[in-house]
Length: 204
Length: 246
Image (cartoon, rainbow over all chains, first blue to last red):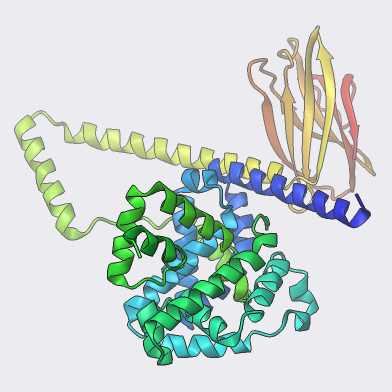
């Protein structure tokens, strides 16, 4: 095993130990553990919620809701095999999309989301302080995977996953048949499942 | 295409929430019966679990982290609405009237006792939280094994450099001999500084949370001695049981 692999494997073991410790302390209602989790997850959760809702105040409420849900159901969440951070990201995304749908301004959201995708800077251009933050390598990998998709597929993914539009809403928004939307999304998500495989078991 | 083929083809769409209303309901109902599709959807969700992080992190406004933590740990007390409070009050009045033996003075006395008990418990919880906070933030932990009259115990010090406080735990030792006491000392650059006496109970540890000596002299360590109970000497005279240096 070369030195770099050894370092990576040691770092991964440390992350597993840290996450397990965090789970145990959260189960014991340790407030410090909650603070650590908030510290680690909040910037990314707000990023997801703001990216979907385009509203800072609403994004903060969504993040609060997700943390409250986790804190109220910590026994179940801690035993869930998907990890604390993915659970929080998923709860945030679902809640944000629920709000977006309730607002009934999906088409506006779709337009804004399509613009935002192009505004995400390349990972190579990341400022040094961001590159050092936990989770940045995951963001980089996901960002690359999204940008490796052809543009029409990337926009379809953006509208479906980050703007919460359904097949028929995307078709209406882009002026294309529903069958084409389904086919683009199916191909795009199949590619993403392959390209995100290396980070599937990542622990933040 | 068979019905099940349709579900197979739409697993990803269901996992990512892209199905339209009726299709989504139909799929949600299907996965309650079809273990194969349920497992496949779980796998897809796992494979795409980091996809939300395609959106970049944003700066957190100052104070938000703390306010979220506070809201979760100390949720605001919700006062019952008037519509709820009134029937309860009426029910209570009715109960008192029917019972006819309720002593108002006794009730006030009970209420006072309950309030005092609640306040004492709140204070105790606050003390315990404070103790735990020092242990949690401890940057140094010192320990010494101690043997007194054939009983083995020890002294543990959790030193929190951020709040400049120590948690001192003495455990496993017998009660001090008659006329003597376990005396804790700070070792400072200016000499020994008398601190607290600790009461030993073999059944449970003795805790003390200590501020640094008021003299302001830099603390280099600590000592535990057995001193005469009435001794007020500024320096140790008795047997030293533990000597710990930072």
